[in-house]
Length: 235
Image (cartoon, rainbow, N blue to C red; front, side, top):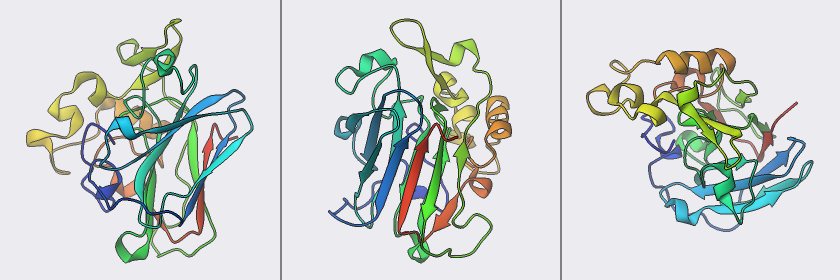
């Protein structure tokens, strides 16, 4: 997550700095099933948006990254643009709105923690599939978080490209910035911050994805997999 800090088992996933990745280690394979070229991006936690790595990924193509055994960061993609001209996307980098695949490798219990986050909004459908390895136990261990359908986007939350096409939908937090929607200030605790109306709609369509900041119980996955696959626009 980019606008708020998730206080959870995977707090390092979005907003908290982690150790810089080293070469080698676990692999994330990103597959483009969207039927068109997308701009793929990834960013290490704790780094500014200026450090985002971008490349164009053709329809049907895959790209693998091996960021390091202790890496924490996020992966996303956008359509309607090119890595050389992100303004066509209506936004740039990991800035809201974007469907995010979030990872923290080698966390508590030597498990990898991962999720699909819609907390800051959404654009492309996505899931994460662990490959090999062992589960550390628990209901959501070695599962496949997924966001393959989304609710209708309120007009105030729509993000459009230069041609007027809707390319993403902001979350209630990203649109309003209010402490109540963003679980900040006096609402920064599980007991005081509940899912807002839009987050509930998101959760109904994507029950295994993060819908708001304290959605840990049904959205946090842990595994000791050898690699992970991020499917963009999965079948």
